[in-house]
Image 1 (cartoon, rainbow, N blue to C red):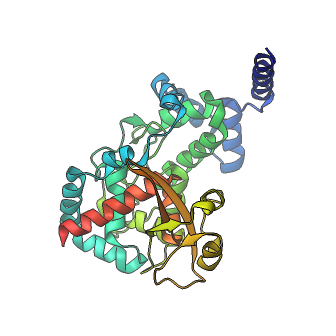
Image 2 (image 1 turned 90 degrees about the horizontal axis):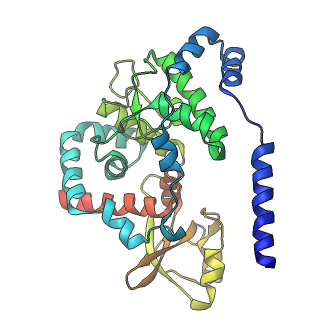
Length: 324
């Protein structure tokens, strides 16, 4: 009975927090855009009036994880690291070899990593999304309270970028969350990291593969990619140290010397002052442990998931092996 009362109390408190949270209306958002960025109020009112609330997006965003648990790594891997994607990755490499080489030379990011990102994100540009970006961002900015602040900021960035780039905000398509183009950039990422990589004075990440490739490489470079350095390696941990090492922050904040003192069994060639992080991945045979370096962490800046980063890494390796 006490447990039931506790659950009810928690629900009441959560409901109260939601009700008391600051709710920004569409009209307030428009007024902010007018005052902060000198947009025309009539223009924005008409534009956002054409945006459609997509219930299908809200349904996707609210979909619970099956049995409250994320898909294990060995199942997740099959979706992104498979023969079809590897073969398509080699083809993409061959078709864009000169641009990929130029991106690698310019930004220091391996071609295979750029290819794998695009392969995981959009199957090499084949699936860039069918939702109008304006519809997706408007829906989530004003009808999805849990992350409304984030999506209002992305809507703000989208309106600014379409204005600055001379793009029709009603025409661009993307994912249900508003990610855009061949590399699936959110509007804020577009404004900060998208580049013109073919010299036509346009940043076209939707249909221009040169711009998409250059933009992904620039994103990684700006997030601290270390050219020529390792990404991740399989490792072992002393049994009595597993919990402690896995409890550390998900970032390479600690040196190999520190991690070894705490139970890491690493016999590689990286110097002890190198920073690393411990990753655990569920396989059919049990848990496997990996030592991630700065470059692995950089991949997680594209998508904050250890599974995602490992899929990108392993797909990149498989594509390179298949090509050479």
